[in-house]
Length: 86
Image 1: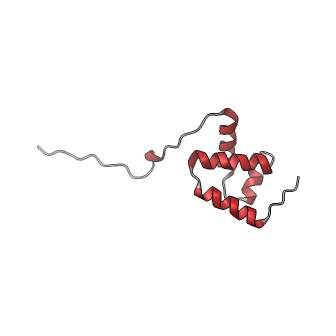
Image 2 (image 1 turned 45 degrees about the vertical axis):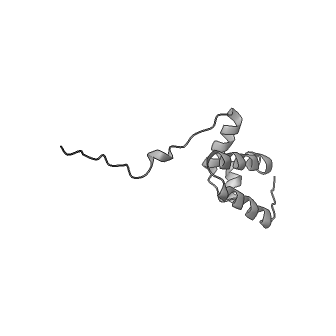
Image 3 (image 1 turned 60 degrees about the vertical axis):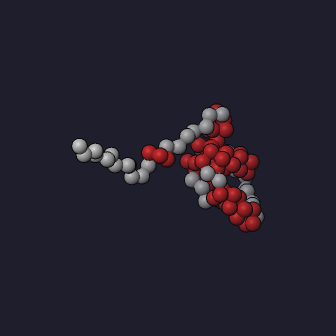
């Protein structure tokens, strides 16, 4: 199946995807993938600026109804413990 999307539509979808985060972004990407790309994250990766792993996770979340949570607070520099002098 050959997919043709107008360049303006691709720009619009990329803009929407860049403004969304987390679960909402994965949900929107999964809907686009199901509607336009026959549930193929690889095809969607070619057209849009998204990773196929993110799209696949969104498809799995829609299929199972389970929302995955990120561990953003575990990333980055850790807070140092302050020593109390007595």
